[in-house]
Image (tube, rainbow, N blue to C red; front, top):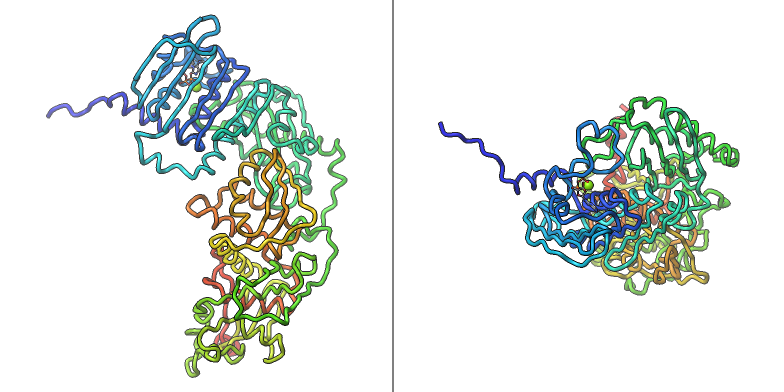
Length: 639
Ligand code: ADP
Ligand code: MG
């Protein structure tokens, strides 16, 4: 038999290795910036186009390379950082496998310009798909610039696998923040599509955090510090009241290298126990210095997880040091949370006086009038009394002139075979009467005008709305049902761009970190479609001059915070459109909560609006919105 084993050609081997090192633009950013740090740079600039899909360039003023080194740097296992396997255990540098540049060059177009400080001229090298295409002497600044263009140009499957620019940029920013937080003494800058996202002067740890996350961050920080034999700990935690819904700012650095550690994270959370609300996350920037010998340094360069010899001790030190800091800065005793968090009150509602919801019924309302003429709808019945909506707005007016099949299907096949299943006498809906264009909501408005008897609805446990149908009864989950109603409404408004804005007398000014601002600027267009009026962004400031009719002013910051949280966490990732995610997020934030009392009119409106939806049966998060119990079911129970 002939020999069949062959060595893989180099370029294939390199492509395979590249898959391990380079998953996405952010991986390239990490490798290039870390190389610049290792080269002793004091200034590092990151230039990115289209979230790194088109260009990632890192320019440093570090040591630079000779022509020979520059050429060698693209060979696999070429590294200046370790000479023997023992060196692995006392790593002062970031890289050590010498694979990054070779991997990147295998799957992109790379141009490197480099010059050692003592040399007069430098070297320019171009690589394409792992092959050297040119090498020449050039005039260039001292230090190194590496530009990576058209990532994955030769692996279309990988390129197609990349997420939206917004998601990829988020990952790039994450890597940039991690490295720059670890090295505050180095000056960093980042540009995306020609805009500066970050300009970070050389500074100390605290200033670095503030420069990255916004000037308002300073007052949120509580210093943490502990010095023991096994561990030197320093850094900051956010005061408990700044715990956020999004995971956001949670950073561990071990020996100046960003790491993830669910175990140590747990220690921090434990220190905050009782001080923050459920489902909010503490923010922290913690720097640990540990003897490198007691750390199992990653043998895989792209992994950020590491193992410690004595995790339990680290856990205990971390937890008690943070507790101590929170106590010392007099933070713990100031906090006084209400016991009943089960009701899930949005934060902004916490200290508001309780007020019974009221509803303003528009006696002039004509359901046949064009929707264009509508002034808009208060979003949440619970906020009717908070002054959000204009007089005359009626929540129930979301009822639409659309195919009512969703509503009717509820009644089809519900069991009552003997009688005409279309005759829902107990809710008095007789669609034939209005010539087939009827929608479920109409009759109810008529009821309010006193022409017909009212529908019976009943609120159970401040959570469910119960109403009768011919065949029995429907039990509606008020929160989920309202989510569905709002979700479909926002989705429609964003699609047809019809949102109605309510001008604010005093604009609302809110502050966010640069990365949150970058995210918000992506969402700005969609927000405007649903009725937000937003001034051009300035620095860390967003000025809102108009809000969707029906949203109250106090809800605005909650809405934005939830939007940021949802888009940061990438739920449910980019298989859904931005509009869809945004409508979900807004629906979630603004829907009436479990625990809110709804008056009769609001209950009725909810029932009608739900069944005017295209998919009334499911919340936007695919949970059932209602169940039905037939008389038969009941009868069985009484056997
Ligand atoms: P590693 O960082 O693991 O050594 P890389 O492939 O990232 O492997 O880089 C290979 C070598 O190229 C490095 O060891 C270093 O000597 C050199 N090098 C890479 N980037 C730079 C840079 N920005 N400045 C100076 N030298 C660099
Ligand atoms: Mg490297």
